[in-house]
Image 1 (cartoon, rainbow, N blue to C red):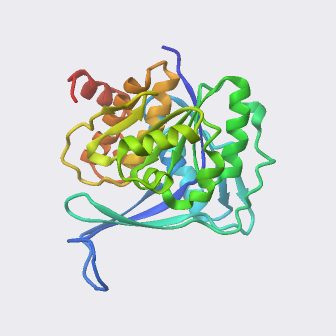
Image 2: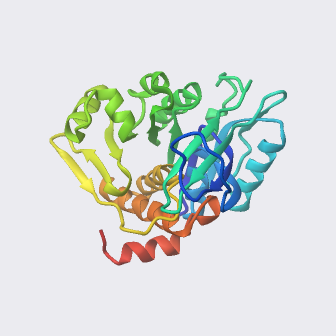
Length: 302
């Protein structure tokens, strides 16, 4: 199979992961077990994941001309993600996150989304989408996502939106544009007003032009086939750190679609990739390569 070309667009973070004996439930002070500096952000994590899976990947986004931005781009470069179309903004401040992780792999995340990075999307080199097989964008820079989704529709490029609750107004701006929208459970509930998966997906399908789906952690992935919800269970693993699993899922899902897989096949590829990362540990360095993912898929479960 020819190498697929993937573009991800959206946010990129420099994350500090702090391992704690337990997650705090009230103001407290105690020693951390360990700390790790790594990359983060929805679109950048998806880019790293697709590159690890063998795609020719570009990350498009905005960063400050600062040390954090330098670090993020260097980490993407380790796996060959191309960053020619990242706009570095003088005086801008790159996004930075802190993630608290408990021994059972659960986490709390806190993000500073950056400052003075400009929402202008007029500089995006849309002609460079020629030959791209799939695009995954997040909601964080909806102006940029809207521009690439509209161009992609004209070019017949498959598009995927990662929809979460961080900015519901931005999500609403994008609902009618992509071919696939994968919601977080919280985002789907906020959109539909219902915690019921079927009701939520039916409601979303009336607002969106493409496939609507939702990921619910270890419970798996559901999508609406036009008549009823369909389910792909998550691969059972002992999680060390679940942070970034959804971002990895969305990137791998977009790659699966680019490779010609149907929704179920793309979701299984994505589920296996995310599961292995959760079992391996923290940070981008724990994202598996294609050989490891294919080996898990060959086992035939879930």
